[in-house]
Image (cartoon, rainbow, N blue to C red; front, side, top):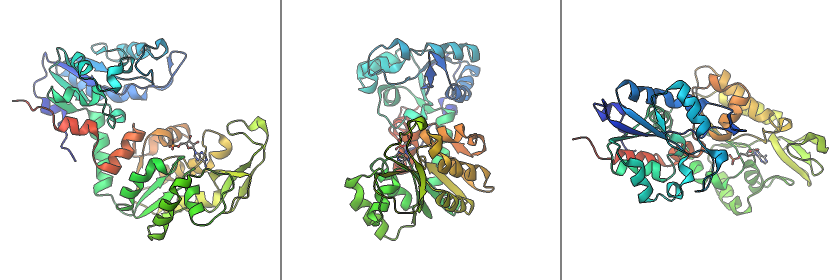
Length: 377
Ligand code: AMP
């Protein structure tokens, strides 16, 4: 892994101009911030810089405006809130209003670093992207990892390199194909790999089970079959909460029948959550572990008819004593928060894609850029 320079490595900050890349990609509705966690999490770094006399300019993306100015995605609500919390810092407009951000355009990088002495990356959730504001400034400015980025890297690299055992990874979410790299890496590190969510059905089908009309990735059947035959310690669900074809996900009033099945799901039925037996079995595996990494919901948790499996995994993690629990961002972090268990986890990552890529590769483009940045003379 690249060695990450810290804020202290920047030396004397008095009167220095510092550009900070933060992740202020907060959820908005009608121009109001629905969850300000990302703003709060950037404060330790920003406060450190201000306290040490730096002139701080912060930049972030917000949503996906795709290189055009979209007034609904203006960073203004964040600017207002940040103004209340830390009025000393200056916040630039949404980076993704400029096509140069996602294209990593050198001219855009040049604009960003104008007049700046140092660069700090605290946007862990965006550090797997080679975007201008992530990999550009460290080519020119002495740079450091902010507190949040440094903590994410410490935690995730520690469980990758020296986990307390038994170490269990629980993967869910919709697709096997999104997680191939991480499955391969995890199988080299974990004692047990538990697979739920939509992605388990391709494994179950590869084992010869009936999966009805559940999610299937035909192109991954061979891969799943090979893994299962390799003798790897993979644990799959054996019962399901399913719905027939009259039902609609997210709309209980549309009708349809929801019922439990065993491992074989009849034609016309779709597996939308792991069943109670599997949830209990996964819970037992968690309770017997010393490290748990969880990424991806066990079912369509957004619809509360199919949220029980995900809730049980989150609850068991939160309640297991003496176990180091890490939630890998994205939907699992959202679920842990929604069910009220996030505060009882040891670490809830702020980056879904970034945490998976860091576990898979042991490095990220944003980290490598910091490690290669010019040193102070
Ligand atoms: P991903 O984006 O791959 O992490 O997947 C997250 C999504 O997977 C969530 O929106 C869940 O609703 C969805 N999901 C989880 N389990 C299932 C399932 N059994 N069938 C269909 N979608 C699922």
